[in-house]
Image 1 (cartoon, rainbow, N blue to C red):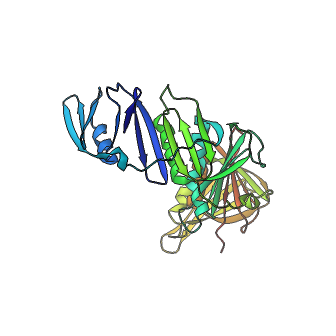
Image 2 (cartoon, one colour):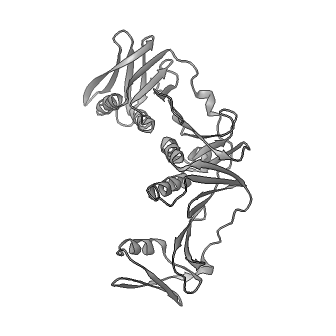
Image 3 (spheres, rainbow, N blue to C red):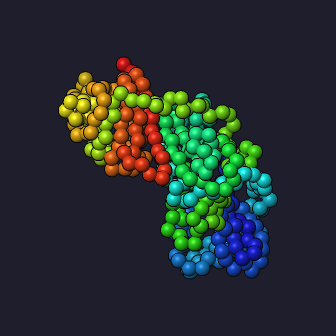
Length: 345
């Protein structure tokens, strides 16, 4: 905690990532101090609305608010780890709403297994070749599914690609949600890329994180550029059918069979378990192409439908051995696509 110049600056770090936030206040005497983060946060959350007086004496922080008078033991500010200051870097600007949406579309697809560190982050390409200048591509994959979303970006026109740890971007998403209804926060979020580091600035909050070294896989080669069968159907109906079939999916496999029948204009979702039984749900759909079927992980499909956040979805496939593609049925300013690998017999 650092008090100076009419504000209190709060900073926390886990050595991989640091977050700081400015809080306006009346500073009678500048100074800095270190307190246990969770203890202080939990206590402040219980305080009533009203002014909070903070005073440091020796190794103790005195907190007064209304009828509360509390002492919190802490440490000298010199004991706090040094947070590096990023001075030079390439800057890009994204609107807060578009960034919030982009993060909700990709974070769930990040790998949790540390065996391939580059897959535990989100690959962000600013002004990349695939979409050109003025666009930012967010992509995440765990090798079983892939989520990609494209949003508009401003600032530097220099092409840059970076892998940002998922935990850091999850914190960015949380920050955006906390300040969502604050009328004083700016419309844009600033990303600053420096060597092995990224800084995200939004209003009074600044997040600094290490980036993940390595090369992100060329995932575009697995995105199907053709299909044999396409279904346009209601997203909610497909989600309900998936959930019904999931009750009979085999434990550990989470497998359901998706059958596309152009003749009857139906998509049939079936879950079969030797012990529990079988369920088949039918969705009406606008189908083109030939009859087809594929076995998929129902959890992956449901994740994709939630990220899609559209009333109608396009489901495209080649055959039972190739990736399937899930897209919004209507175009929007944010391009989203979701690839799911099949479960092979």
